[in-house]
Length: 212
Image (cartoon, rainbow, N blue to C red):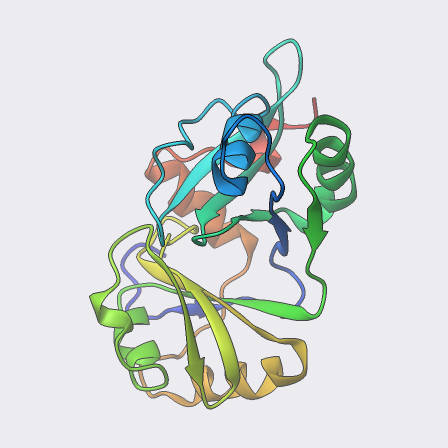
């Protein structure tokens, strides 16, 4: 898989479901975002207070013994933190946040998430959403497209360079069809490829870590 020139589009619905955690009405002079970051740092061993706007960071939910509950992506969207958790653990993750955070946790369930991964990902997506080539690793943006408002990150979560594209659920099939129509896009990838590439880059693989 590492030598393939293709990018992969995962099956719709097989990627993590996006979840938004936002704070408002923060006490002690903290802004909503600052309070959300401070509280989330008690659940995730990562520095979030210094996370820049339009940047994201990889993190892990841990239990009281330091064991791993789940992995997630955390993005600074300016006035709130945007979290992407694994679909299989979504209910448990949301319950964990609501039980331990005083800021509101809003669940976004009307969008689909597509992954465009591999060496040709930038060229393929640039044809559809101009300007994404300027994104750095771990950048996030919100922008308009022919498929409605899209939320894009560049984390290459599979272990390759790549983009994760959140689109309105009603437009997901059209977006995926447009991606696949590009002559550079000629292979679908499933979880086996992701596991190999993540291990090669020393990125944790949830299925290997196992349940807490």
